[in-house]
Image (tube, rainbow, N blue to C red; front, side):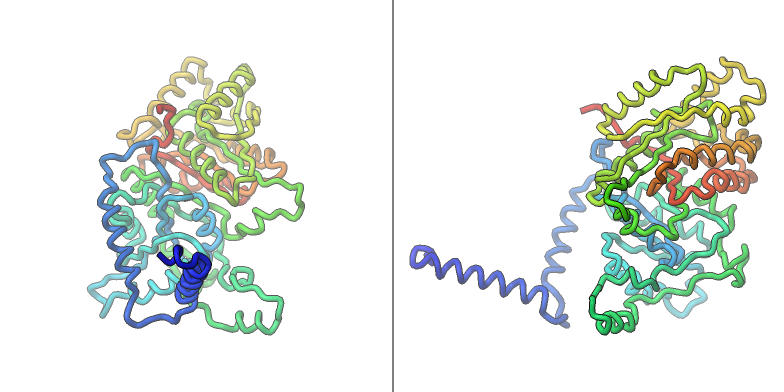
Length: 457
């Protein structure tokens, strides 16, 4: 009726009303009587979560739903922002375990920490939930979070852990580059920096701190590998992140030269088992999927995926490259394939030095692939491998990876083998991963346990 009387005044009135609503929404002070929008959102979210039936889950609709375990956010800023990219539109949960016993405490110590964690989420501009737990050990705390995190059909399917090494953490929350407010006025900038941060976290451990495992550590190598093993038993994909302490997302994605490219290197083979190299097992396809998802994120869309194909003498390089290229085409993954001869490296492996015949090597490869494909078989042939792989071989593999880094990549995706079934080999397993990833820069060791790719319509 208003438009029939006077269309101009009607349009102006509606525009003014919308402008007034926007001003009230963004500039109104915090109310003490609550927000009706929160009640409406709760009703809609509850309704749609009930409709998200896990029994109707399908591989075609798979997406990464990540639980990132954070010991101290002060040293994990780079990893937190990177995982926010790799989860894309999936679930993202920041998990933290505080050691303690509630029966011996006067109150819950976690309630006072939630505000700091939520302020950190807002400060870093990431889309994540926060889950904190109190447990007698880090291993039991991670088990709690894997069991209870999420709701309905939105539950973590991938566990991300930092790497266990002797490096001291660095505080990245005190750097001025992390503050979102930037001003050319030095007076305003100094006032912003003088303001106390909206979050409060404990100081980082130092080299002189006391701890059961040295340098203030409360987690030992045996317990760390046990956490990896527990996650795989619960059919969770596992990702180990190393050298993300100095990772700066803005600097990586904005190279100094306009002509410089951003590269993401992918090594989708089990480098500890050269006789079981396969690009089509569950773990390799999961690794390719994560790299593809990262490349689909808007900020990483200009990055180039480099896929390295390890080949040996006597095998058709063109045939292997064409087969892998066809697989990438079927999966609609854009990547550049680089054949890498590694005969000199493989010659250092115990299987080759032991005089394996071709038939024995092919049988070992078939058995290794069958073990990776079996989801119910939690014990593979890695324990025998863990006792015989030499440090010389691992150092040669590490050097092979470094030699292909021209220009150096922003991040590397590597294959994470299963932990050994014998818990006495956990220390050797962690030592091998340490040698494999030494000085590689930001790297992800990835192990997938569930299929995530299908070519069926």
